Length: 310
Image (cartoon, rainbow, N blue to C red):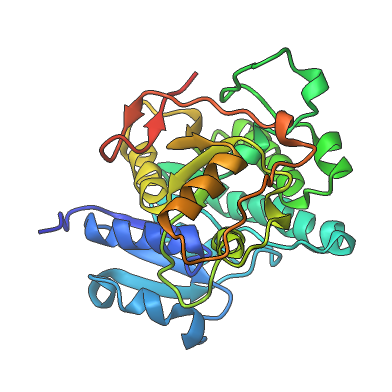
């Protein structure tokens, strides 16, 4: 039976891939969850949340928009912990500044401005990405360098290969750290690698879509990935709760499981699912050497996810 003595926490962008699993695990852990979404009445996007165990008793969904200052005030003021997972997913390069960067940076700051107003707030957990750590021209690295939580990706390099998601994540996280320091907010960041696992919502997320493409013989999305980390969505959700509940947690945490090269990935999938047209040829692209990751030591579920602050 879940511990029902836990407090109320807010999850921003509650209908998203990571956020939905986080809501699920928070409810199962006994928390009262207040989720923010752009349209609580959109049943296509939120129905799966109401089907979660404990939702009828301990879930609230309220409207909030990343680009409306003060939009998160009521939700944040009602809670003692904030999980900021909301983030735009835009791939159109022409929209990067107007939409993605604005939503990611100003949206994060809008949430933190609301957090600043809550004197009873315990901690903010920010969902960032390993893309804030691992993307840099390989010419800038010594051979086989290992990256950790003190490392930052190069914004210039990400712009040069048009990975706008990474640019948004880097700038949003750096803005968050600066704001948290200036306003004495207890902030912890979780940096998942390539997140895989089942969707709770009927809408397929971008990561799952990329993997699904391999089952159709498509390799384009994987040409820039190279060797990188993969982690199960359930472990990512558990990781967020772990760093929220651990008093000594601080700074940034990479959340990762296995490390595979693109060729290793397609070989594994082709062997396990021989009836699908999974490509047998190389899918490694020109930027494969730019991606490295290190696996850390404390796991939350079997031998799947490692966390260690450096």
